[in-house]
Length: 154
Image (tube, rainbow, N blue to C red):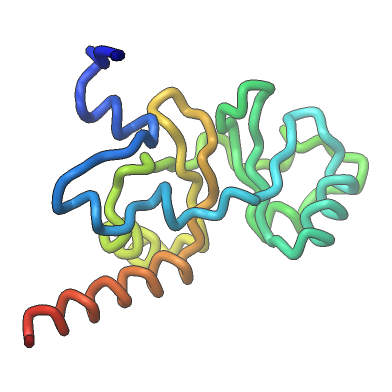
């Protein structure tokens, strides 16, 4: 038996499982893509572009050795800088991050309202869970809405 004393929000902030009626609704931590490419501050842009492109991505999350998010390279940043430039000189530092427990409908709204292609999902201590892509969030939010709407009609 383990007594988790930090509290419910901290528990959810670490992406740990929950119970109850809201636990059935998809959350950012479940929908985000865990296979997002990562790189370090000192990595060279030419190498990063090649890895990101060959993996079929247009974004890369900049992390430290503990996978704490330090920055983000979206398509615009990936197109900038010489091949020998280091990531730290090109990245978008301190991107907005969201916790795994945030509902997918709320996340879809944030991404659309702020015209963000994606956003990192992190634990409460800043470690990368994955990258939530706007299209994934919007599609899942629509599926949830349609499912709940049909359930109310029956």
